[in-house]
Image (cartoon, rainbow, N blue to C red):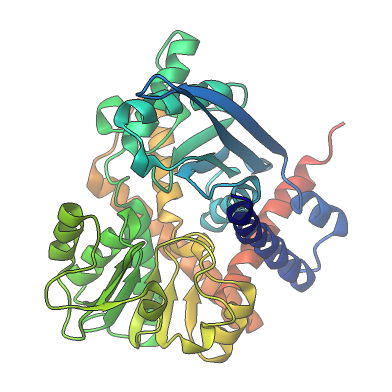
Length: 424
């Protein structure tokens, strides 16, 4: 038990250290005011809650949950909630900081937040998950709300979990408050296109990157690490663009076929068996080996710290599009940039999810809903503009795309802090 805790601590500490290192690198490049830099190196609020949940066998188990708000200078806090056995305060802090930059990159009026509960939802019944969610939501009542902090789905949470949070919040308020969360089912104020938004936004950015680098998407080879919501939908959408999916992995391992994989059939296989491993006609690889397959486009859509200084030299993709949060370390960034790999950073590449979450929140507040074509058109406009802004900064300052995205984001947040001033 002690060994497992130490291992988790080391892993999660590194996520926060990576987030701080990324900020520090950019602060020097943009000559950030040291006082603003100090503010941005710290989170505004960190809430830790420990709460009891009655399990199906009538026993009581105490769970630990977190909600962190990094910065709210540009608007209410926004960020997902993840249920994961390795969730930790340091990880949630890092993710909340990345959300601040992500919202700023695409220009939506939010600050960054993130939440997490230490649990293994794969080992819990629906009833246990509902009771855990409702109690966790009750503990968060003091800091969430449509004007304050708007949670959303993340790793191992989904529209049903958001519905439970929305209902719990509403029952405590005495009236329906659909705008308290996003990523909800359509029947209670969700948005058309939200489920596909992270992957669709990623594909819009990949498409712009391909245009700017002369890569033809028709026939381009693609490897996807992580076959959850973002990874599987990205694979399906890229196939529609004419790409050939040659490698796919999930938490249990990966599969490879140089002649191509049908992402629809792989998804059905995973739903039936619990993993992509064992798909007919494909070679089995490890998650590490999947990343090293020669391809045109690599989509890391799993967890943090997948590409490090240990394997960055082995990445043979032309474009790495980060559908996951924090899959690449700063050392790996430098190595891939030197090797000519174009990395589309998470705060740009996967910002489609928070962008359509913003659309959902706006629709809830106005009680006026858009169709999917409108949602996708607005998403494409925002993602295309954000890519151009970041690309132009990268070209002008001869920086990699992550540094350019951070330069854009940090400047925007710093401007908001400056113009608002320090109270009192």
